[in-house]
Length: 204
Image (cartoon, rainbow, N blue to C red; front, top):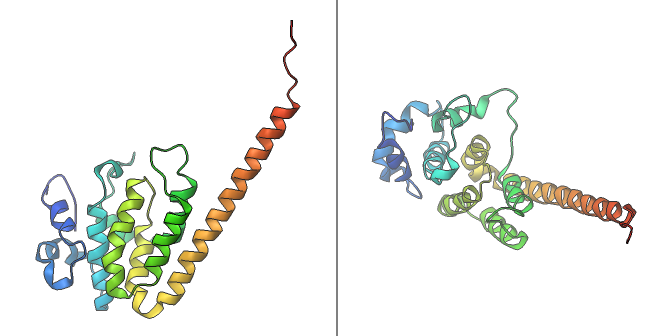
């Protein structure tokens, strides 16, 4: 599955697979099939198609080209096994949507992030495939990075390990959120103390 300038219809073909099952994505097969691992379960196969569709469905503003050239969705999926890759769960992405929001045109409130994340953690495999695209699309519209390789792993393992994955998402959310809010509070206190220690200008 390559989204490239030489194949302008590829991105449209990938987007067409959002929220669809494997028997309803005929346009995607030529793009996804070469990247499927062997052996694989149907859940893993479905995860590849779903993640590819979500990558292709990102807002155009989110498809920035890196300095060393464009990173295609196939490369992002292949990054699963890259050594030294920093892995971030979806919970960390939701925390970033809250903590990095101030100062942007858009931001996500803590309550909204909690509600969306908790909704996802309560889903079956089919429910997660149904709700995940809108949640991820919202994150990307805010400029929040999503670790596609980690999400691919989580989605493929959801049926067997949803409890562990959900726990990780929630723990990462509150850990990152708490750390960032504490840092912001410390910075505010330091700014306040600095302001108090600065002598007032002399009056003429």
